[in-house]
Length: 290
Figure 1 (tube, rainbow, N blue to C red):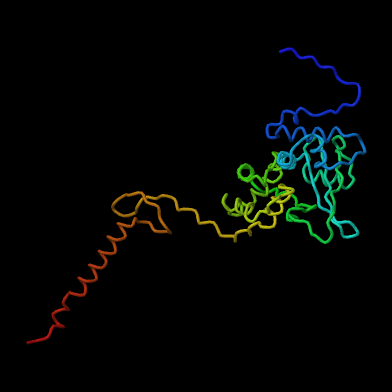
Figure 2 (cartoon, rainbow, N blue to C red; figure 1 turned 120 degrees about the vertical axis):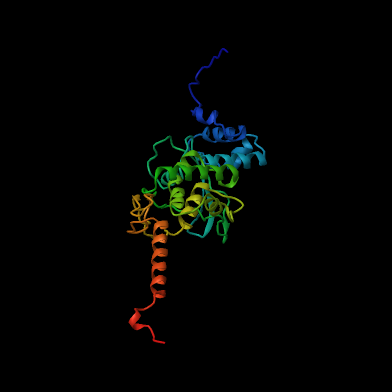
């Protein structure tokens, strides 16, 4: 195949190949993201308007937006202003951002990637509390550092399985990497894979704005208690040769020197000896005279 391309001198947008070739983004999601990134600086346009401009239908737009949020290219927050009105702030990036990175950019920290395009807040509604705020924690706890690596890997596999089966909890590879230690902590405390899945998926809202934040919140808030300490079982005794007549090798329970069969033989012999002693007549001088 021959390919001929001339880079434009102006009015162009640099888009990473990871977006164009993304295996999980639909054509509508790629079109929506690249269109939003191509808007001139200073233009604050919500994704819904961009979808209309790009000719993306409503159903395709909903699916595309869900995919972009799940992969970390779009982040949304519901915020209340001083007047008590609620509005939605959108952030669009040409690189994958974790929830923590997006929050840092939103709050004014210097980004390490190109400046993302920020959408305009949607029409606010008065007196209505935002839904699905369960997972929005701006100061998540630090990851456990004492969890063995095999449990972290298994926790990551369980998270990936949940993400694959539950569309509302679509996690990126980076999300799973960040949450795997928390899942491993569950396993370390005796939880099963079923316990983890139920904790993450039971009672999910119809719409999840930030799957990673919600998963982190549930993994932290529902963390099972540390199991009570139990003393380890004593080490088994070493094998020894029976001191009886059988010369067997046996493992003693305590400090016995003979095997069970020899101890039973000794007990039976002792019992027989007692019985014989009880049946022995007294001396002749003690016998009654007739």
